Length: 161
Ligand SMILES: [Zn+2]
Image (cartoon, rainbow, N blue to C red; front, side, top):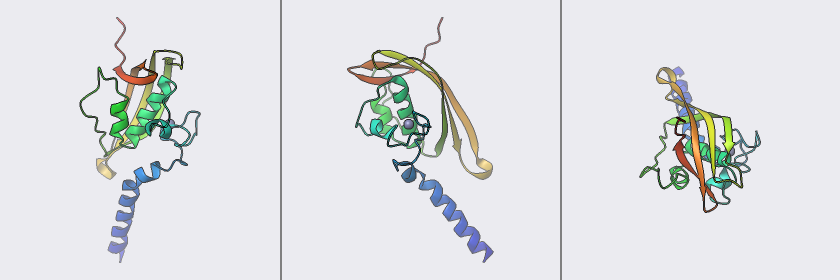
């Protein structure tokens, strides 16, 4: 009996994890990026940008939509918003990495009337479960450029000499 309970608990936990992306696609839930403004839902924040309903107005909004695309494992959005000059041939977010938090640390330019901007952020991830669980973070100052009215991710900002 105990064993059965354990097994069903295990599979329920697994379903919860694997069902995570469906849940995240619910536009009424809080945006994975934390929301701009803070607490905005996925439908108010990143989903319209990811689904092409509107373009990101600022470099920060594009950066947030890319974080959310990583969180939802949406490689298409990552590819489309990567500057053609620097983008890899394929962008395949690793589905076993769960992105669990974004902090925007600094924004320089990248406003609606500008053509370049920098966004510094810290993104936290978790992979695996139980004893094999690993955590890490990505900390980057990213450069963005706007061409033909659209913001693109260029890459990590070149260190200033
Ligand atoms: Zn968002």
